[in-house]
Length: 402
Image (cartoon, rainbow, N blue to C red):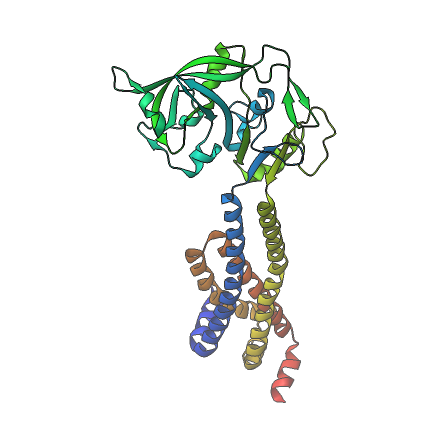
């Protein structure tokens, strides 16, 4: 208690030195905190960019050619759909399966999709919905969106809903098993070209720009296929968006078991398709974030040393004017430890309000960094104080007489 009282009295009497010490520490503290905040902001920006960046994957033939003409069988695309092997790692799956239909004297295109972005028409032309169904393109609803030129073929039921009745024309599997033709990069069989007609009744929920085209949910056609064993559903195009970029390496390893990279030669008969992960920007940002983190970890000890050096220099400059005071304390019987403790407590009281204010204003990570700056500053001050305090009393008196 006596030491604290003496320290407070000395700080009040030496207002100039106390104010200079406070301002020096405040300037050093703000400079180091500003530099660290700049590093934190840069790292946080890079991490946010990594979280928001969408990494897309595209399935293609080996070598990356014909991504819109896959003719992909069910055993290959099913792993991307809900309950599939890759589904937990994907936020969007854009699958397109192109077929045809007949209606009276009209021959048109029947396109099954799992997302609006799966087809060129629905991606670049807005759909005018007359009925909104949540996540409609991943549902099993028997609904469709058709082009305006087919509106004359719809009929209305007693509830006022618009319907269109068509014959869907699908590939048939009656003539034998399928096989992959490595030279052409396509699936062929004796059944290729043989069609099976399946009557479909679809509720119209919207219109879109185009000609003689009907869009329906792909999963609805899967339910129709379950009731028609001769019907074959192939994927003509397939792309996806990675759900969590942090799991990208795991997803890449999983895909490599069934797919090949587009820059590798196909050497396995079981790997007939390639997956191109468009992650160049993600990898670049990841490397930049890692470099930024390493730089921040490298500079942090240097900043602590700078704070320690500031504490040493400040005390060395101020202790020259306090030699007489320290010699008087020592000559009155105070120990070197007692004298050092009085001086050190003074700098602790100077640093304390600055660090407390920082804890209330800045983030927790930055306030912890500020606490370490204060500790480094006090440690530097303690080194200088101990050097002066442990100088022999006779030497201190002799220096004062000189």
